[in-house]
Length: 81
Length: 233
Image (cartoon, rainbow over the protein chains, first blue to last red):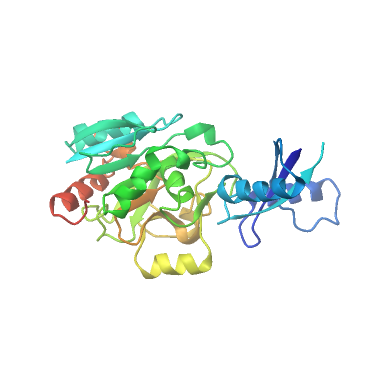
């Protein structure tokens, strides 16, 4: 089983990387681009957990270490593979 | 007075800090390994600059779980003086010993240059002997200080901003802000003032061979505060 954690900058927190990427996309002709936020994806494989347990453990991992909630939001997904 | 300089895997300014405490501030000093937990006999802690754990995940995010950090939390709670410089500041925010966070520099580049600082509060244990303006090199990629509005207002209201980025005349201006830090913040303290975090490196400008030596006053300030009984557990 695989836990996937998405970590993104909180709304209101400066994201200079996102700004730079938005500028890059616009200069490539993607005129429809508004705001870009750059975050990260963390995959964690786990054994012996139900889907519900994996979600709980994933959220605990994110809150304790994988995200810094002062400046980042996270959401957690679980995949059976 | 005896200082302990903590070495994490990836610390690279620990020897600089050790040298300045010993040779410039002329105090006793020893290295502490990040797995140590016994701080008996230690009067002040230095969390030095560097790239603890290779900055994996976020700067300071892994180091905050090193065994020594729980002892340092207790040391700080008891009033012991702690300074976190650069990566040490990042470790202190990740550990929750100081509020806010250090984000990627606004210009996205690693910045390595001499930086003028204005002392925002000269009555703190770590600043009381500092001149109004200091020069301290910065060398970081993630030094943009951020805190939510409420936290920022509290820091400002309680005089917990220790240093701000300034120009050579001491003016705190947007142009003098190298990394996009809110309110030009270069260093802050906890509520009691015994824990200081700062991105610039005072230990890299503590002797005249390297500049005007003004960084030495940060260390001399805390020695004075300790000897006067203003800090210490």
